[in-house]
Structures are given as C-alpha cells and as structure tokens.
Length: 539
Image (cartoon, rainbow, N blue to C red):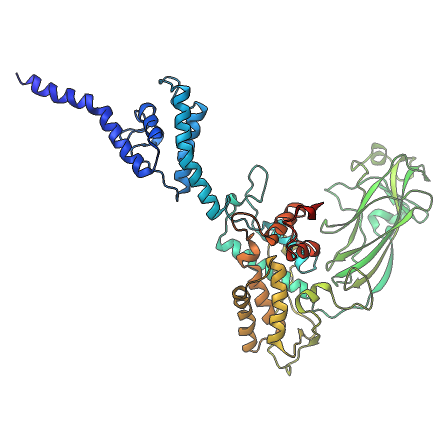
C-alpha cells in the first residue's frame, strides 16, 4: 500500500529533471549573459555530459559563467564554440544537432564572445608586452653607444624558443636573476664605451705571414713549410683549412694590448700549387680574417693573378687579439699525399698564398684619422667634455673601478675589474648638474626610442644628482644614471599601446623586424616628423 506513495514522487521527480536542468542552466546563462538560443542548444546537446555532478573533461556548464575580464574564461568559451563548429562536440555517438540549429547556436554564442575579445584587445592589446632578447639587447647597445665591439649577449640567460623563435612575448619571463644580469651587462657596456684609457699614438707594423713555426716550418724545414703549407719565395701557400681540432693559421698578437680601431691590410692570392710552382687557380676562393675569439673581421674573395692583391679593411680589436687567416673555400681534410709523404714530395692542389699582414693603429674611430682623439662611444656619453687625470688633490672622490670583461670572462658572464694605470682618469665638468641633465636627456631619448617624459627623466637624473651631492666624480655619477635608464622597462620593453601604433612605436617595430636593433637616425627623423603613418613614405 505504501508503494504508490513512493513511486509517485520519484516518477514526478524523474519527469521534472529536464525542466530543472533547463531552469538551472538558464539561471547560469542569465548571469553569464549568454543569449537564450545558446542556452537552449547547450541544454539539448551538452548538459548531460557536462553537469556539476561528474563533468566530463572537467567542464561544468552548470557553474561556468562568461567573464569578459578573465582571459582563461574567454578562451574556454571560445573552445566550446569552436568544438561545436568543427563537429568535435557533441561526440559522434550522441545525437547530432541539425545544421540550422547549429548555425543558430554559433551565431548566438559568437556575438558576446567577439564583443568580449574586441573589448579586451582594445584595452590591453593582442599580446603581452615584449622585451629585448639577448641579441637585440647587444645590438641596441652597440648602436646606442656607437660601440660595435660590445659582446654582451653571452652574459644574459638564453630566451625560451617557440617554434624556433626567441622573441615571442608569451614565452618571455623576467626575474631578479635576469634583472641582475641586465644590470651587470649594462654596466659593462657603459664602462667599455667610456674608453678613459690614455690614448696611444697609432703605429704601423708589417708582419710576414710565415713567422709562425707551424706555417713556416720548424728545425731543418724552417723556411720551407709544413705538411699543410709550402713556402714559395715571399708566399706562404696554405693548402688546406685547419679543422677545429687544430690551431688555425694566425699571427702573433699585434693590438699592443690597446683596444681600438685598426687598419688591416693582407696581401694574398688564389693559386693552384703544382710541385713548387704557383699556377692560376682552378676555382675562385673565399677567405676571412678572424680574431682568436672567432670574431670575423672581414670576408672577401681572394684576389687572383701573379701579384695577387691587397685586401684592406678597418676593424675593432680587443686587447690580446691576434689575426687568423681562415681559408673558407679550402678543404679541412689533410690530403693523403700530404699526410703520407714528406714536404719535398711532389704535390698538386688548390691553395691560397699569403705574403704579409700590415696593421696600423690604434685609432679612436673608424675614420682612422690620427687627429681625431675622441672615440664616438665617449662622445655618446659625455659629448665634448674633457678628460683629466685624477689626483688626491682633485675636487671629487677617487673614481670607481671600471669593469671590462676579458674574452674568457665575457663568455661566462663574469667581469674582470680593470684599474687605470698609473693614475686614474676622470671626466671633468664645470657645471656638473646642468651637463648631467643635458647628456642624460639625449641619451634616454635614444635608449627609449621615443621622446622622454619628464617624470621618467627626473627618476634617472636623481641617481646622478645624489652621487654628485656625495662628491662622486662626474663620470661615476653619470654611470649610475645611464645604468638606471638601461634597466628601465622603457628600454627593455617595447612600449606599444593597443590600437594603431604611434610613429615612434612603428619605427621600433620596423627596425627590430628588419635589423634587430634600434631605429637609425633616418627612421627616428621620420618618426619625429610624423611621416611613418603615411603610405607614401614607404614608396
């Protein structure tokens, strides 16, 4: 007799489930601001698997609301829309919606989603802010400081790659470790660019290429060559390119332990070596001049003809740099006849003959003008302010130690302190605070790649003023202000607002796409004139 009283409520409850589901979903949908057509579709085709009891794929449509302020929420609703559009959902073993019903849902769901995404893009842009990667950081400081010799990217942590690219904003991170490395690298760049060492008078030195024993021969073979070289008159003929396991063809150090620009000449010719004779080459040859740190100074086609030719170029040399002749077009494998037989055995094969290196320098700039004693990198930092020796009687405190990395330390991101002998040099200003403001504003305009706001400028200038008030020498005070600018988000990050890019942001977008560095003077001038929005500018 009690059975009907039990069955009846259960039956009523079972028959009411679809209505309860629809009511619950509609309640959520109203809060989620979804159109009724979208709610009805989800009720018929999705809610059975994605309820709040045991939701498949952890997707609970009972609880899920549309939140335009939450990017993950928008991405999830977009995924629901896209799965329905592609036919991924509902699954193949479930009843499929009709084409008209599906189209109604897609249209109804797309409208609020599209509006939410457009509002988000208008407010925040489409991507996160991107910062300079190590290569761009190095290139930018080279151009900003007119110091093409700077090697900084090895000091910075490598960037994560996305599909082979190391400049994807969503993969970039910033941590205190990275900031400390950026600060350290900025300090090394500033210290290198100041070039406060006493200037050395340029000299010229001619070096016969065969002076090295491995090239010219040893013992009884001296002056004849070696297994991979032959000496014919004034020419040392290189018959192969030494592989990575062997020492390259190089000269002694000739940079006089002084960094600077050097004018380098090398006399060489392409030949076909045949039993001691130098015949015309059977093919063209390419060579390069490198330093001991594998830095390429020049690459060129090797001259031909009985007298060869002189290749001349200007390059920056660090301390202790030697010159290496790299035979790019010669085989690096030792030929069997060279390996098996002695130096007097007949041999025929391609080669590059080198007579001498001539090295002239150091100079302050690439122009190699002996009368120009002010390096461009110094001018970028201190303009035309003079340099004098610091003594205990100088009106400022003793200058700080400069941090100039040697080649080994640079690879490992370390610094090697260098103290100026015998007395330290200092930059002298008669009006230090006025000069600090003038120099810093010009520097920051280049570093930030746009006009500088006064609040930004004053924030960095405060470092210099505080140091000057504490009796620091002028260049030490400016080092602090310059380093503050170089670790600012306005330098490290691309400052792009959502919507149409302004001229200066567009200039940066173009330059880092084309040459991975800051805009050059021509591009900056076009941005200052507001001409980059005009399509005619690009014709």
